[in-house]
Image 1: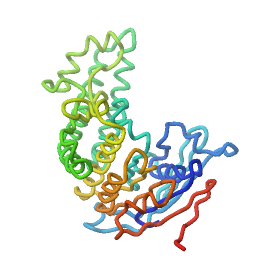
Image 2 (image 1 turned 60 degrees about the vertical axis):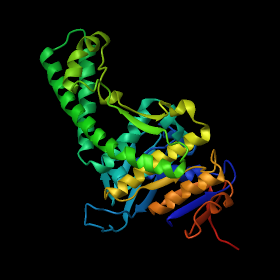
Image 3 (image 1 turned 120 degrees about the vertical axis):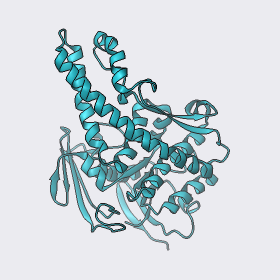
Image 4 (image 1 turned 135 degrees about the vertical axis):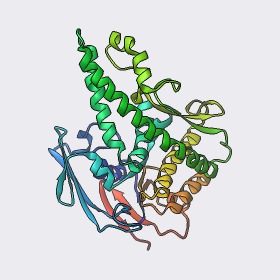
Length: 353
């Protein structure tokens, strides 16, 4: 595939399915929902995608590029996932995500502004995961600790010694996660501000705010101790990184409540582009962008600005539209576009006559 790949065709032709296949290759799931069944043909028991990744790898040598790495993912209707990298089975999706870092901009991406905090935590953790290699281990420990602590809290009789052990581990891992997130957020926010100054100078009142999930005046251990009575009464842990959030504010108000639909899409693009640029700036390689129907909600002028920023990042891009001219007219002329026509699920390379 080329650097910029455009898939065009009528509605329902299968363009988005191409992006979903790439997302499955990088995340072992669809970006449109948690159920894998929607990806599998009705008369099939499973689906399989495979490809080759060629990405910057600072872990090998400064500026080195590793040889193509074959990657394959098989998902069955039962939910079982089989993942292979370099022909060898791997156990976690995290190993897959390291091979193919993906940023997705689709209609569902509006959830970053309008949806529940979970989507924004996942957005933040994507960036932390790709720049802080110890984060995932701490995140796994935290998930295990909070699950065990909540199980104990739900019991009629609590073993004080056992609960104290899990609370102590929860405090340690939760503090580490918050530190990683805070450090990352401090460098992400200026990148977002810089990107938005290019995309929408009129939105100069935009700012990002990070909420860690408990009172900033308290350590996490202190917050857990303070909330112990409520935790035991209701049977779950109320405070911690699982309650963290990023709020996008505009003039002191939530951006989701004050911005138009088009402005919201620009903000979503700004959030995703800021992460991609920061990843490269920190020497962690480049990510691949999957963009479904960019012209939707954006006029030509703003589509042009988004495309200029994407082109400047020299990232691989897979983008869909109905008419190829929608992208040709806004992509920088110096960039070569690989055009593909999609019809009834069949993808064909499109060549100029």
